Length: 121
Image: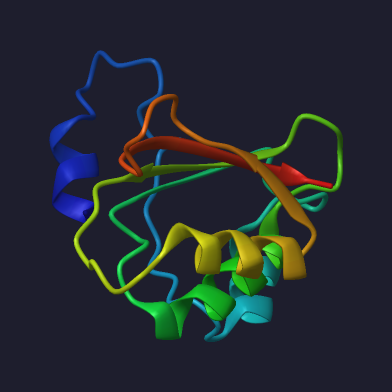
């Protein structure tokens, strides 16, 4: 990921120096990450792709997001999802989200794949 960020920053880019990437593992050292890297009021937007694949990480995922996302209206957690695990139902994912105070909007249609938006209840 760091290489990707570096490759997309050029000397003439106005954002040069303001983009960074830090590792965060769900449920591990979240408070430390929050103190060192998160804005004081939390992030307005958190994005993830290919992060919903194993049932055992869902509680940690939503716990981490709930600690890092801003409490302000309009703050969102965007998840781009492609089904990789047929044994992980979105009913379970939604249940975990609800336990951590999130509602969601799902992709239209009969597929579980697409962009999900989670927001505070």
